[in-house]
Length: 403
Ligand code: ASP
Ligand code: MG
Image (tube, rainbow, N blue to C red; front, side):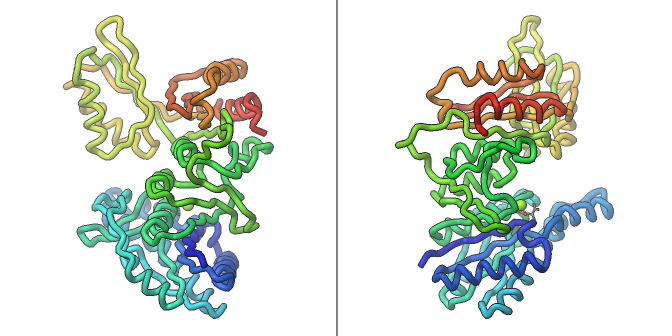
């Protein structure tokens, strides 16, 4: 008998038929002798609709109330899934994040889990019932409802799997696994049987939309094996686990792209100690997570600092940068959201030279201009014009023979 956390994303529970199909799967897992904790997302595009509703109603949107609103989506699903399970004779009990004992910090709309008090879930399991937990939400140390950031149900599932010592965390979604690139752009993209945590972190951080980044970090830190698979075909998907060091690593495992970032440039920054610190402290204090940073050596005593931020943080980042221009003695701020980042990820890069050269040659061959570059030991990212991104992905996927 295994203890499984099974998470069902928005498309997996998008309508009544889907919810019944999910209930059927949970019931089958129970019949096979496994214990199940189900974690659910909001149905279909419910969260997007709630976000739009808030936009229509309010210009200020107090964060506490945004969380109260957004957390409602998952509550609908959890109750409906329990009803569908009841029809199949499976006893199930729904829990909000708060009731499930998911305690977070007080940062509304992007709260972090600080503790899980799993007693109620354990009691429910011991009584032979299936706990069905609303994903994406918790209760803060100030006792307010919080949400974990978009895509946060994955994090709920992984955190519960860690807290309960589950044997596996299954993430059910509308694709059959993690692919070598987005199959909508490259039809020959391959499903990957196994991906290491480190690779998956880079894939999730650079636009691979299958798993939320925080959930992968959590899984790696707590050694929770993940299985990403389809709730439409139920076939085996992609396993995410420790790196298999006994096998030769692929040089490049996956190619991702992300057009959701924007570029901010602070122009004419005097070449003095402390100015970059000031800028990035200002951004950090507003909870902006900066990704790429480029600063050139200066020849004239001044330099430009460019960095990228998530598109939704562009307004606040621009505000921070502009407010610091006088104090920094800089000459101005420019922003550009018409950019996209194309990234190559692969554990084998550590030991294979020449990946960067082939990457740049391939982009050059396509006439794609590289505006910014950043690397880690297992990733190369290039910022390009948004309109060039898909062409770049196709060319790189072919050049590294990932099809
Ligand atoms: N419903 C939330 C969202 O759409 C959380 C999730 O689905 O993971 O972002
Ligand atoms: Mg999701």
